[in-house]
Length: 191
Image (cartoon, rainbow, N blue to C red; front, side, top):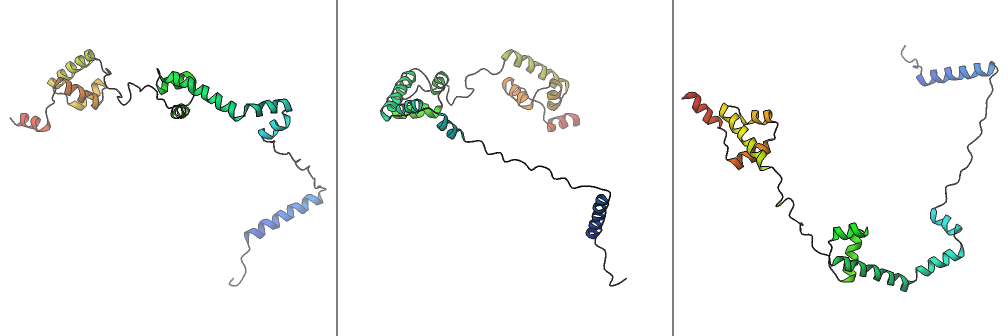
């Protein structure tokens, strides 16, 4: 017992595998060789394809369009167009009108030495906008007051009317509604 080698699990699996291979060949089995995958070259880059496929006249026309004087004149024309828009439009309006990005319009303004009209709503958020309906708020305040007078707590009012704590606090602040505190309720029960 002591000193005897423990049979390895790996050796047992290899022995079983070799036995099955031998029985396969004895039964007349053959080894098949399958065809290997053929080499498929990578697709050429688009720039390489267009350079090869491009004809000489098209290439000459493209190079002519890249002449520095012509490109600079074209850029100056675009800056002049945007300068006219900037006299009556904000960045957002010019962006929607031209389809150019804000960064591009900013570069044109910097290079052309002009500014766009300021956005009248910038930095104001919801200031001055009527978000709530005063008639609905008044009706809600009447319901809250009626429920409070019956003895319903503020949390129960929120659940029954399906409104948020933020909304009930806003209504309470607008219409000066106060719910009794826990100390006030205890004082009423003792008295």
